[in-house]
Every structure is written in C-alpha cells, then in structure tokens.
Length: 118
Length: 171
Image 1 (cartoon, rainbow over the protein chains, first blue to last red):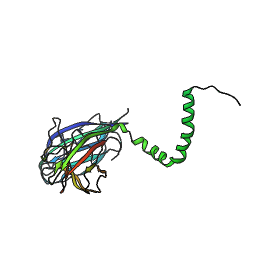
Image 2 (image 1 turned 180 degrees about the vertical axis):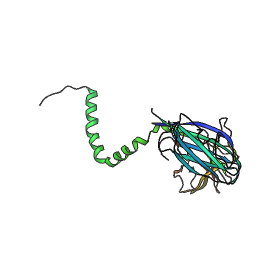
Image 3 (image 1 turned 60 degrees about the vertical axis):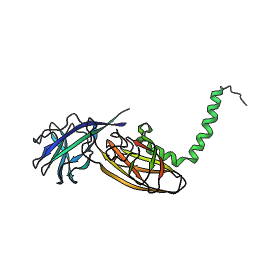
C-alpha cells in the first residue's frame, strides 16, 4: 500500500458564533466532502485571523446521518499557523469540517490522504 | 557412489543457497525477525531525497540553501511525506556546535503561502566531535514547504541531505 495526498480544499472562511463548515454552509446536515470513503487521514493546516480560539468539529457519515465526530479547538495568536490531524476510525462517504467562534477569518487547506494498492 | 551431471549454474546455486542460508538463520535470527516485523510498514521506494548540498554556516540564521531571506523555503513539494530526516556532517577538524531550527507552511494551488511567516516545528543543537555524522528527525509531516535553518558561532561548512519518507510512520 502507498499513501497518496490530495488537496481537497483551499479557502477563506469568515468564522462566526454560528457553526458553519469551511464551505460556509450553516445547514448541519450539509457535507463538506462527498465520495470520501477512500481517505484514511486528513491534514487541516492554515492561518487563523484572530487570537480567539476557534472550535472545530469534524463529522463523518453518509446520507443517513452523521456517525462519527471529532471536536477540538484551534488555538494560537492572530495570524498564527495551526495544524489539525484527523484520522477517522472507519471509512465514511461524507465529511463535514465545521468551525465556530469569535469573528475572524480562517484561511486554511485540507489535504486528504488515501491508501492505494500498488 | 553415484555421479550426477549438473550445469555450472546449478552448481553455483547449490553452493550459495545451502551454506549461506544456514549461516543466516543461525547468526541473524533476531535481525530477521525484526526485519519481518517492519516489512509491512516499510517500502524503500517511498523515500525521497528532497535536498542535498553544502551549506556555509556562520553567525546568521541561514537556510540550507545559504539564503538569509526568511520568506524562502528550503524544500518544497513535501505534502506526501509523513516524516523528514536531516543527515550530514560538518567539514573541518574542530568539534561541531551548530544550531538548527525547522519551520513549515502550507501553500495554495498556485504555490502562494496561506499566511505570512512560518509555523515553528522545532529546534536543536548539533554538538559532535569533528567528522561525525548527525541525524535530525522532523516528525511533523504533510506540510507543503519546510525551511531548515542553521547557525554556528564558528564558521563551518556542513554537507547534508534532507530525505522524506512516505507511508512508513503511521502517525
């Protein structure tokens, strides 16, 4: 097996108190990524615009609902870099990368890593 | 006694396989077991050399490429790699005392960094007798670009290499 990285998202999001995903979708059922069952890990890196912590939740599931989630906080100074490693325990078709917090911009990139056979 | 006609190739095969196979089993048993354990996770094909060359170290923080411009990366295209290793040695007959630090950042589809500056990954001081090899492991992988900086109060010439492994370490 070998691992292959794929850039899934690069963008800027205005973070607000209302939870939204990185595509700026407030609907809690809306997925950020679909057809993502081949990914075994996600590396979420970027720069936060303010110094206030940003709460994040990554959910995994499918059209029937969310079945798994990982939550945490992105902390650091204004214009500081962050890195979040997400390793879901199973394969999920859908993922949602959701953030909320004090108003600030979040400039980030999500790289998915999939394991492929030789 | 019975005679048997064999080809030269067959003879070589018998000479090589029988005694060496036994010797390996008796003397390298532990190493073989260890190798067998590592095998599912290790494939040397996915180790890449990202940089190799000489760096003139002085009192300034310099990239491995020699520049003092903090905006420039030392290695690019490092996204696929779980882990990086910096190995090398310093030329000269004096003991080595070189400080190093590592920075990382992510870039967008056009290669533009997502933000200003770098994320500090770590720092180390390399103190060795002269002409000794050193090795520094950089554990935080999957960043797009890294900047490795070195500094030495006594000017030194460091010959080094940055390699990266993929799929070997399961973080």
